[in-house]
Amino acid sequence: MRVRLLGTGSADGWPNPFCECRSCEEERTVGRLRMPTAALVDDILLIDSGPTAPYSASLGGISLRRVEHLVLTHGHPDHLAPSILLWREWVSGLTVLHVWGPSMAIDLCRDWVGPDSPVEFHVIAAGDCVTLATAHDSYELRALEANHDPRRIDSIAGEALLYDLQSPRGERLLYATDTGPFTPAMLESMRGRQYDVVLIDESFGDKTDHGTGHFDLDSLPVTLHAARECAATSDHTRVIAVHLSHHNPPTDELRARLHGMGAELMDDLAVIDTAASRSRHLITGGARSGKSSHAERLADRHPKVVYVATGGERPNDLEWAQRIAAHRERRPSHWTTIETADLETTLATAPADAVVLVDCIGLWLTAQLDSADAWGRETDSDMRAQVESAITALIEAVRDCPASVILVTNEVGMDLVPPHAGGRLFRDLLGITNSRLADACDRVTLVVAGRALDLPRSSP
Image (cartoon, rainbow, N blue to C red):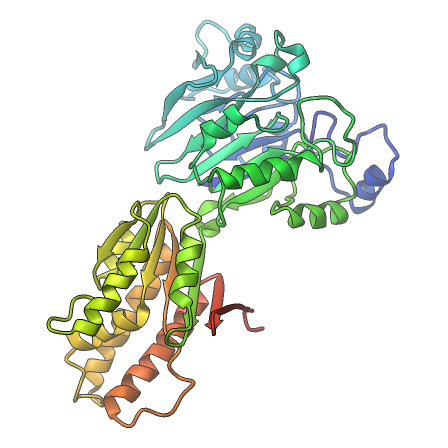
């Protein structure tokens, strides 16, 4: 899923054109303007279209011709300028545009289309689940309740919706503006969703006496913690603050404060690519260092885990059987376990909403050496080429896996030189594999004596 932010600002944008506060003046000084929030998904779905969204698209070099669905959160003018439907009608040869939203928002659109306009309207309400069919695929859209200005429950604000959008590849976006703190009912509707991206309201910054259905810097971290507790978000979720106003501190300060609560700040026209946001984590360490336990604790934060055991069975080896049994006993019963050394196929077919935990790469490499009949042929170039080809295929599978991946490996190059050629071959090839996997991963952790140390990426 590719999400382009056509705007990240509140109704009046940021800076407010009439304000000379510190936040507004600093934004003007650097020439930054945040226009009302809207998002374009895969160039096919447009979520909200206020008065500036079409112009933002043009500034970003984007045509809206391919948009097949317009999804509206509510009818406030910063989220809906229905004139876009008239402008579209002036261009010939366009396919049908499906417009989705609460009844009041849809009613505001009807007078802006002619009887022959290629537009179809669809009224939806909180709790509805619909399929957004496109020319090549389909998306699943869930409308969720918003906590937007409860003082005006019978107004357009009372009809405001949040949206849970799932792509054909299983990636999930939560579009959460306009809203204030998530209620228990709202959190329950998001439980276990493991969103890849959350676009969340942060209108009021340090102004906490606004009394409206929006977030400020006091209420936002409380909701983000609650979302994490109910597994609506996880380590791999990118939380982006939107609907920003000049009530926030200047950008650099705001960015630092958001970072402290696990959220990000992005400029208008920035792109969020969920393929890039899926995490790749390599965990290495010596024997009995605690690396597997650390990996399992990380994986257990996710509601859907695929555990890939690469060790296989060893007949008549009681000690090995006891090791396998201990691993099986400590794994949660709801995890899916696959016992295989075919990591290429397993990673390629992993569900996008899962985290795949592979334990371990050392045993996988042993299986590749067995398959190549490597032992006793340590200097055979054809054998080595076969194993190195398998390593390359593994690296590509890790990069292309639709799910987040946690890989456990062994650190065997920090001890004595093995006395036999086979041991030296294994050590060298595992070192090469670990280095290449580290390059493919966005996080590498070394576990020593039960202590986990994150390793920074080397400077170029």
